[in-house]
Length: 279
Image (cartoon, rainbow, N blue to C red; front, top):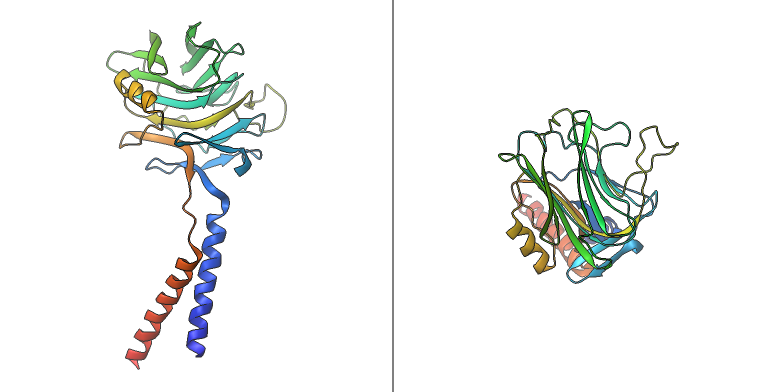
């Protein structure tokens, strides 16, 4: 009977531990779903209450200085001598900076960002090459709709061409050289990261409010056909072997209490039987 008591106790503790772990961020998890599983940090206003669902996607509202998602570096070599692409899904709104790899005023080769003008009618993507920014922008090509939009930038290394896409449509392109980011340890900030202090000392500030669905970085050049397929499917872009980063809001499977308890009891019974056979 004493052995059975400890078996039941073990099952109960197993139940408690699993429920607590699964409930850290409620039923959702904001994470890097690539094979690298890179560490990320969240601003204090990014909570479960900021998460909504639209279609088959989970969205998180990022707002203000503390509404950010941040990688802890680890992207060295992403843009160097390679094809590369990024694609993001956001709900269009009154946004200035959407995301940026780097720190304002202390940028390095290989940094990049995406901005949307306050009138929601212009898109800009910037890339740091040596000591200058290479700008790619499109004016008057977007609408004032507040629906979800799929934005992408691709780089064809063999052609040295950078292209900008809006909902799968090519809206701008220009020629840039390869960006040697092999020594670039800068983080990537979605909606910027507020770190205290004043402007001009390397802080990146959150500058907008928008619903975020996904940001995926790939060391491949997305084709327009691929981008159109993702847009018309109305969902996430899937990770593959070329994916360097895939930040989105995932759903966490909450353990069933009864199943956990029975599992704990079953495990204890197996150990008890083994112990008796050994006597």
